[in-house]
Length: 304
Image 1: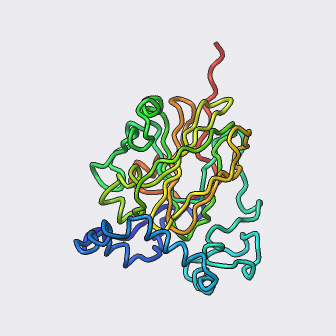
Image 2: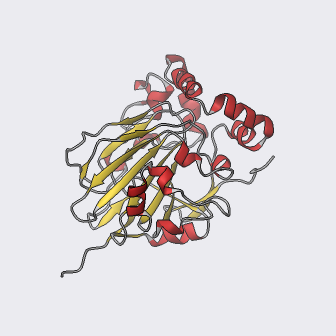
């Protein structure tokens, strides 16, 4: 079976490499690493009906009994959770849990914030985003954005890829202050975005169902935020009001059950990505860090 190597990332807070605990790892490796699994993938797993049925079960009252084992097996810090554990009516209700505000402080306004609790990769120049997960893979921005003109605007801007695991806090937030437009839905299947899947086919990121939001900011130009669905994510919920000004770190939306991805694109020359993010990406490793933490610094235009 291919892609059996462990998934290792670097934790910004412990300053150590850490092996990822993958929910449903055996099933994922079978689906994305074997010939019979590939048949199941195309016949059922990537189809919306599969994720809808899975989501229906995760939202049923009976699924709540999974919560204590999930917390124990994946070392969830219950002290961060806003509501008491007995208040969750289903596993999905727990999955989209809110955190206490003090659990995720937002960085200074001189910086740009990470949009989610995730394993992050970043490129100062999106055109140099190659060898992603495996050698030879690179981003197809026109396909990702569904708009060639928009892709041309951002092809040499900064790119952030934030991969959320099922064990993570699954709400995503605005990386900067500004005024967001209404989200544009781009249809597609719902394949996994786990590394064992992306190592075989990075293009799931731009063929999966996704929603694109354009954020107009007063000082760093426009920002593109793409929420990418995945297996089990039957819906992406946008909770902001289009046209209303938002603050950096304010919630944008959430994903229901499953792994997910948030991709952010910044105009050329407007931000400088954090040194640890750039260094680890160059080494082919993801950086684990929390929503609201430093993504990079703003580059202020020189006085004319």
